[in-house]
Image (cartoon, rainbow, N blue to C red; front, top):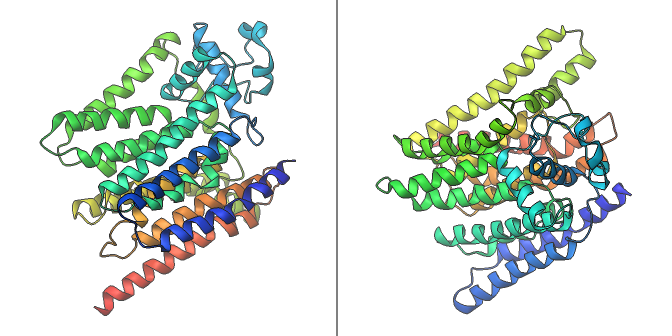
Amino acid sequence: MINTFVWHWLLTFLPYLLACLVVLTSPPLSGRARIVELGLLLGGALLLRLMLLPIPPVLSPDAWRYLWDARVTLLGYSPYVYAPGDPHFIHLRDFVFANSRYRNVPTLYPPGAQLFFLVSYLLAPSNLTVLKAIFVGCDWLTCAVLAWLLYRRGKDGGPCVLYAWCPLPVVEFAIQGHVDAPAVFLTLLTLLAAGHAGHTNPRRRAGTGFLLGLATLVRLYPALLLLAIARRRDWLLVLVWAVTLVAGYLPYLILGQGQLLSPFESYAGSYTPNAGLPQQLSHWLALHTSLNPVLLHWQEEGLTGAIMGGTTVIVLWLRWRQQVAEEAAALLLISALFAVSAHIFPWYTTVLIPLATLLLTASESKLGLGRPIAFWAWYFACTTPLAYFFMYERDWTLYYALVYWPPLLGLTLAIALSLYRRVRK
């Protein structure tokens, strides 16, 4: 059943690619035609999501755990301390518990995500459609913010079709109901606020820090945007971001009587076949060599540190020289994090598509790598649904050959061509 659903899902990428091709190759419209085009794109995006909203999750039961977390919190317990299988909750076991996953470990979802769960539960207890509707609303607002960002930068809003009509977020949010939808929305909203905020306007910088704090409280990866949007002596933005995080975690710290980080410990050592490059290299070496497990662990940690550290240094250096835009810096940092993550599921990568759209439509940098990076980030995100074919397989070689290796080889070739042109000059 899952494979049949995924095949049908993948077929929807064909009309999506055609729509992208038509919009991106057509000359920019003006006047009323421009408004009509944007209305059709955003209206179509909303229609696609609303049509799929009543369908229950097919590929992932994560959304049921969201409802369970809200139920536990409203009873006065911390979901960061008590797992669903705890004896305290025997009387609560119903269809929500039956459909939840990881019943023996506390939740991993940060307080910002918990806020969305609570709002949904207060509006309609145990109603998954209402929760998904909230996420769909955030996802559609992401489409609108993306179009506005393009407009603010003097571009036509048409390229927002790359995200608005992409089957990846449509299915992962409207059907599966993943909490990444508000995270992507708040990430785009942070970039919008950062573009408005200037050095001499403390209120706007504080607002940007607050939005970034909210995004980080939903998913942790937006914290990397600090390196992409913070400016020299931007202490107010950093302070507001930090205070927002503390304010978000404090109620759960009190509710859990000082316990908070135990769920991170529960998930930290877990491993999935669709892990990042360092984990895959370590796994391959373990199968084909006789290296000591300790050495393999250090190799994995070293490669992870090299990828993240190297990307951070490159981004900071380019920002110092004013040779990289904020969306490019964000895309590089988040892509590097996903490349080394122990878990990389398709819905994680939805954030790459709007960032790639912004970079794809930006003026090309002197290095000439903006568009290749944008294209391959978009390609990676759009091919990750292939992972569903391999969920019960041991050998993921074909998946990596289709999803990981083309971007790596493509970017390597683009970098080599860029260096060759600079040498020729």
